[in-house]
Length: 338
Ligand SMILES: Cc1ncc(COP(=O)(O)O)c(C=O)c1O
Image (cartoon, rainbow, N blue to C red):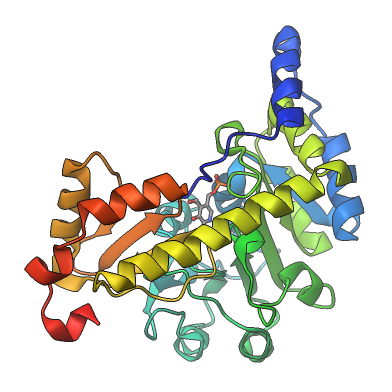
């Protein structure tokens, strides 16, 4: 599920252990300390930040809030998203009372031109995943800006940056920066991946002020929980920066090594800016997934499309490569294997 292989930061772990003594207390319902810490780090007013139960939970919450029409306005039901992208989107969209509008990919990435074309008068939002799960592809500054310029102001663009911390390409924009001067862009981020807090369920969103106001009215109360809030605040402490940077650098170095090793054994690997790699194996995806499973390794197979492999430790890379060393020879025609 694209978690990091590293355990929580020692400072965060200590805090959570100590927090066990206070489990009988409700968390701060305003998440005040966390909002203040995020506002400080991002340079965004706390009133424009939402926190919630993971970025997936927050995505659903946002889509629900965006569906509240103003007085007399017709309902907007369509939510445009790329296919193949995060598999939860169609479910989150449906749960928010909306209708998924999937738009096929252009290669490994979003087809932004087609996604802009798919926007109509009943479009509630467009979701853009950058880097994209499961392909690892990124959208760069110029193309995102041109895309945002094409989207009508009454349609919200939700940019999911769950894997932002693993991006090494300097041409990939920080959407929080880019959205500063736009009134229809929301940015989703999470503490689940690079920060290693997946089990605590803490995500945040930077949104336009009116969206924040509506979302606060429809949001679940007492989320995130107290341990999640405390752990997220501790993760944002500048004292943790070096350690987090080192950990992300370890992951991206291992991503490069994993990609190199897989290519050397003849497997196709898409360029990735996230903490996973995508193997466009087509019809061989299921056989690859089965081979891994038989070796006790869980990868994410997308039948007839490909396989997503989360970057793990060097030892895990070696184990995987040993398990699939002859796969290209036994399963792939030469044209696909290079
Ligand atoms: C693109 C994307 N967005 C959001 C999430 C959900 O993360 P969270 O744990 O913050 O809900 C994931 C998790 O896999 C993801 O891949």
